[in-house]
Image 1 (cartoon, helix red, strand yellow):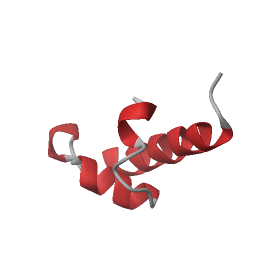
Image 2 (cartoon, helix red, strand yellow; image 1 turned 180 degrees about the horizontal axis):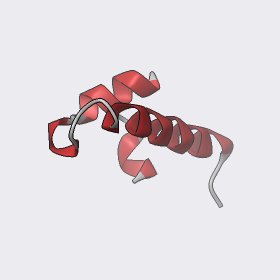
Image 3 (cartoon, rainbow, N blue to C red; image 1 turned 30 degrees about the vertical axis):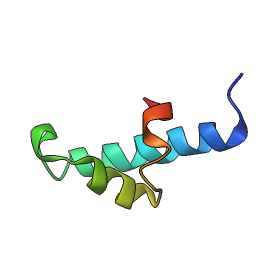
Image 4 (cartoon, helix red, strand yellow; image 1 turned 60 degrees about the vertical axis):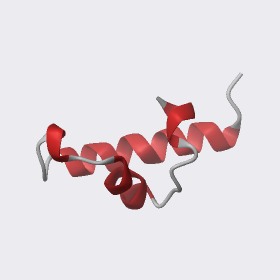
Length: 49
């Protein structure tokens, strides 16, 4: 079972990814940009993928 924080992090990362992908090609996106846009640290990212 996924806890509330993980679900929230997943949602924020997905939303940030979708916002950025319309601005830049996929191969130009970085983890730092996605986490900055999602207003998260890089820690939650591996758990969300």
